[in-house]
Length: 272
Image (cartoon, rainbow, N blue to C red):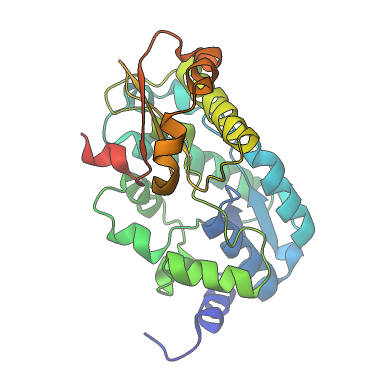
């Protein structure tokens, strides 16, 4: 790896790619790619594209739009139709492949319509080390650029550089798509996605109301049960909240038992 700083490596990589569209979810990784593209190329040579579907969590689009506007880039928000894919709805271990294929194909067409031949994602070096990342395969098949991975930036480096650039996403918790909350083999449907979204909003509000700060929160639809995952330090206190059952019931999980456990990223992958 070059002795250049991570910042210089990334900016050089963006210049080498040239004008491009960024598959921009609004998360810490894609936000850094977008900001780096603007710094390296200028806002008029960068396009931000956020795919909008039932799997996008509440509030994420508004936050993504604010940052894109602040960077001065054109921001497009096409509707995508992952749910039209049988492979996506079946929710096997390769679900992300079908999702990313749909999203990246949509972004690539839209980018070309706006004069951009190159597309980049926020895939970082840690992502590539994860043995279960079928979405990366979809990007490689389409020759999608991965500037963070190409320059060796892992999640820690991404957050560090984002903070030095004063990006509001530098400390943002990971916010994967809502389908990642549904156990493999349980069909992905609009109903399941919507109630997971409602449940996470309701649980976050409940915890705030009782003075519990939570960084990582997931409501997992396990098919025959619900698992609420929160920071390990507050599991015992959250378990004792009598209001939790009502919050989950009102969100659409009235018929299912629930448990509260410590959050662990990618947990459903280990439960296949």
